[in-house]
Amino acid sequence: MNMTPAPKAVVVGAGPVGCLSAIALAKLGWDVVVYERRPDIRADSLQASSCEIPARIPRPRSINLTLSARGIAAVQSIDSTLVERLLYNAVPLQGRMVHHLKGNPTPQQYDRQGHCLYSIERGLVNLIILETAAAVKNISIKFSHKAVGVDFKNNVLRLCNSVTGQEFDENFDLCIGADGSNSIIRHFLMRATQMEYSQHYLSHEYVEIRLQAGKNSSGDTFLLDSDHLHVWPRGNFTVVAMPNKDKTFTCALFAPREMFDNLQYPDALIPFFQAHFPDLLSLLGEKRLLSAFQNNPRSQLITVKANLYHKGSVLVIGDGAHSFVPFFGQGLNCALEDVRILSALLCEEKGGCDPSAIHRVFKHYSESRHEDLIAIGDLAMDSHLKMRRSVATWSYTIRAYIDNLLYALSESLFVVKLSQTIFGPESTGWIPLYSMVSFRPDISYSAAKKKAEHQKRLVDSVGISLAILGLGYILHAFINLNKLL
Ligand SMILES: Cc1cc2nc3c(=O)[nH]c(=O)nc-3n(C[C@H](O)[C@H](O)[C@H](O)COP(=O)(O)OP(=O)(O)OC[C@H]3O[C@@H](n4cnc5c(N)ncnc54)[C@H](O)[C@@H]3O)c2cc1C
Image: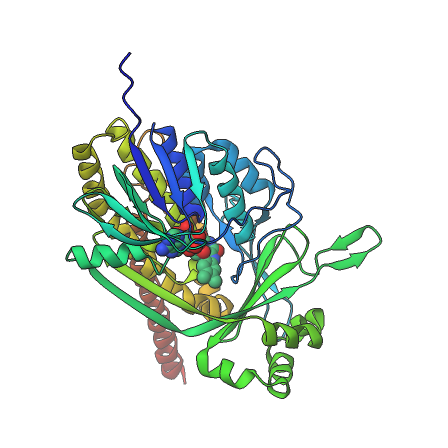
């Protein structure tokens, strides 16, 4: 019997995107090897079939994540049991809670149809997807192996085993670079192609602070309302807090670099929190705040934009292809969507197992995905201002009210099945930008951005017309009053 060996895919990076890509490729019939430069992060207690929170969760240096319908739909399209495990370990969020300097906090619902975001520790997301990939028969994951070079002509990946220090080559039929924002695969792609590339560091950095669980008669309890993402917008800086399944909150202060330089001294830090976040300081306690600032790193936020994501049989996806600031909570959701789209395109080519099919798929992916990646990068940057200032303003509240009113009046709330199409047909009706981006994976990022700009222009022109009418009315009343006098 003539047994043709399965085609071989190599994936660089065992982050969430690398592992989900590996699962998608394995389901399409590929033999997959994943190379990860870190040692194995798996906790012994987490079994692929279990939904329990593992006792030892790797805690990387970053705040937790929010998964939205976009990321969930992407995972669902590849492995529905994986979605169950992720959601089991997540805390649903109905909206944000805005903490003003004075007065009570005000809730803002994310979506009038009741869609939620899901807050989950980033370490858990990595771990759950990694465990699932590791349990798939035709996936092998090799830890402590760093990719150090690519030969695009001969389809060869150069690797270094960081335990033995030995370098060796690995042949592939297809290679996915899912190696994060400092991607080595992207680096070699840039050298081999005319890739356009830009990177920009935000002037704001962040430090993470963990708010411990409280205690009551029945055990641990959340110290803040767990249905909401909490925001303390203070103009040029802000604190964001997200709940974890273990009743803690991961808080992060986002502030300009120079401000952090001044806050490194205890006699500056405590008065700063007393002046701007007194309610949060009373929950955290001075000791924990000081310890967080002494021990936790100050991290940067980078935006990476590229144009062209492939050469031959090599493609970069996830943060390797695009990174953006986390204020729309879409980095991972977008990266998971990359995998869904890639998988759908490969499916159209019956798995893409011959070189010409791979080239067609990668070219199609590169050309069609770019506009969406730029759109969400720009939207994320716009959200930075919103999260530190606008959400606390009256104009934002009024605009959000009008947006939701028109959303309620709008009748076209159909959702297209993603299994039938990569994106749905042009959507009609009025939908707020936040809902389109987070809860409508059938609407592409670029379509959402265009539609939101159009809706904004309409609201602005109605607002200007009403303002002119109002002014006219006041002027008319004033003239009549003068005549009477
Ligand atoms: C503060 C912050 C908050 C965020 N909040 C959100 C949020 O709320 N919602 C959201 O959707 N997204 C959020 N994001 C974005 C999200 O974290 C990323 O988009 C996501 O982790 C990208 O996943 P990835 O698998 O592409 O990359 P990574 O998670 O970076 O994984 C890359 C993997 O590749 C490995 N690797 C790197 N180089 C090599 C090499 N040479 N050889 C072998 N392996 C290599 C790395 O060790 C790593 O395991 C946030 C990001 C930050 C910084």
